[in-house]
Every structure is written in C-alpha cells, then in structure tokens.
Amino acid sequence: MRYRGECIDCELDIQKSSKRCIGCHNKVNGLRKSLKTVDERKKRITHNGYVRFTVPGGGQYFEHRYLMERHIGRKLLKGENVHHVNGVKTDNRIENLELWVTNQPSGQRPQDLVEWAHSIIDLYDNDNFKK
Image 1: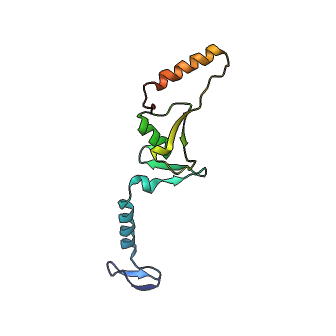
Image 2: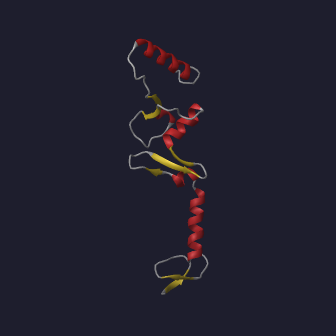
Image 3: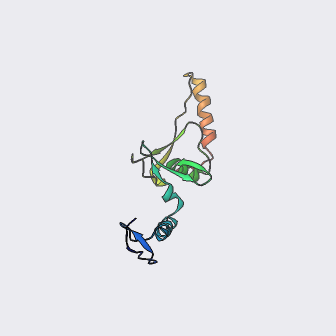
C-alpha cells in the first residue's frame, strides 16, 4: 500500500488519494451525519416522486400522509387520500396538502346515497376541516 503523507487531523499515515486516515475520516462523516435530523438523513424520493422516510423502530412513512395524520390528530382512514394542491409531490407543506375522501357507495339508490352522506357528515363533523 502506498502512503502519501500524514492525516490533516492526527498526522498518521494516509493512503494515496486521501487527506485523512480512516479513523479521522469516519469521525468527520459521523459528525456530519449527527448534525442532520433523523428525518433529513432518512428521506428518500420514491420512483413515483413521493418523499418517503424511515422512523427508527417505527417503519417507513410517506411524508405527506404522516404530516396530514399529525395535522388532523389521527391515522388516515381507509378511503382517505392526501392531495398535493400545487401538484408537486415533494412539496409537503401543510398548506399545500388537502385531505380527500375517495370512498363512495356502490349503489345508486337515493336511500343508499343519503345513508352514505349521513355517515360522512358524522365522520367529519367533529374534525377541524371547516374554514
């Protein structure tokens, strides 16, 4: 192995294309990572363009869904989606996110529609969706 000189931090021998020894290199990179928040280090853009991140011990989440759940104070229900108002999937500011309900009754009889409408009113009447 060829050595080029001394580490700029501790003066140990370094390899040909380095400025630091392996120990100092790892310390510097570890310090850089520790200065970032967990979310910044774990964020990834999916092939569909959405931001996904990992919570240590908590699994993976889509950022827009996670932020909406925190905003409304509960988990999203089946049939609920989070829509990006400006169409930019990485713009997850809460003012750019809207909660959309995609479920609908399968029947078209008026009594089915009225029953479904009452269930939607009961479900969302207590939430803070009114402007």
